[in-house]
Picture 1 (tube, rainbow, N blue to C red):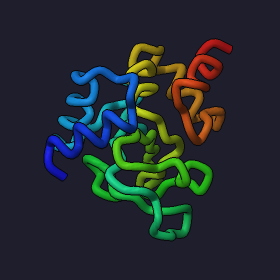
Picture 2: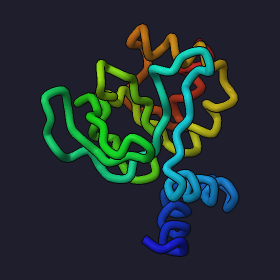
Picture 3: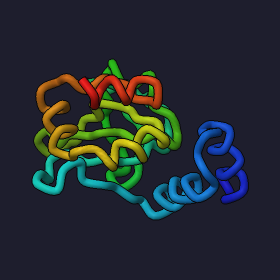
Length: 142
């Protein structure tokens, strides 16, 4: 997709995001960006989904993502995978498994939260398979 098409697509997908936030998402996709969930741990990262999770694999469904190229997403989270959504992926041996799908606007809010709290939620299995602006407050303010 060309830049203008991406901008139009993501503005429809995330109407509450500013133009700058949408540009940041496009740059993350173009630049194959990833982010560590916690600066203290290297076994869990955020990546941006480039496709829906449709290819069946042993542990779930496979999707294309930034940085890692392809990951398997857990069956619970796979239905929410779309281009432009962020995945929390956890290293499992030599592979990464997607545990949760996050909308871009919710991800921007999550970046301001305590990274160790998020890391511990994933480790304890308490992270929901889909995080958006409607449920993010209940996750981080329990």
